[in-house]
Length: 146
Image (cartoon, rainbow, N blue to C red; front, top):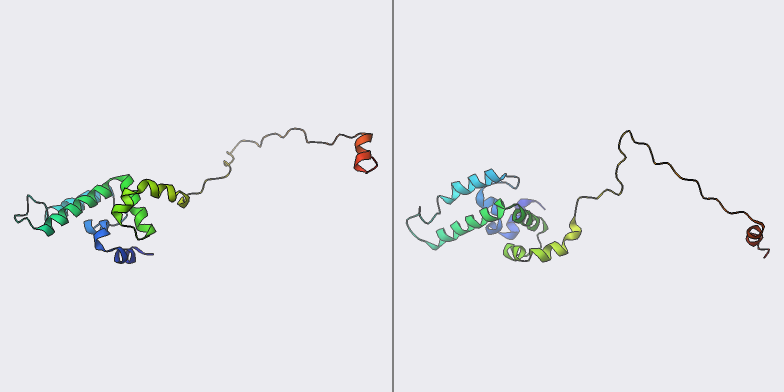
């Protein structure tokens, strides 16, 4: 699923990257620069009138900055975007412990089974091979004579 259809399904209010005007691959500095550029227009001290829409927009920008500048919260937000299970962002962030417990199987980085052999090292020497004990009693048993 691409990010534009995810945004359409969830609504623009949940697209924190779009709210700040940056991409998903933006660095911390880029996110902060976009936040500072946008927050000036909605800051209560800069705007003369106290309208409810301006206050909500300011709070939403502050929330987006809080989520996207914290590496752990941003990771959870990106996971929430990619899963798209219909849960609201607030519920997802509140239930992060439960989400981590139930989504632990979604690990995409494989763990190597064996360590790779280092260059210049020889293979370990094998010990003596196993051999059968030979005796007349064992031979008779194997031949179904006893």
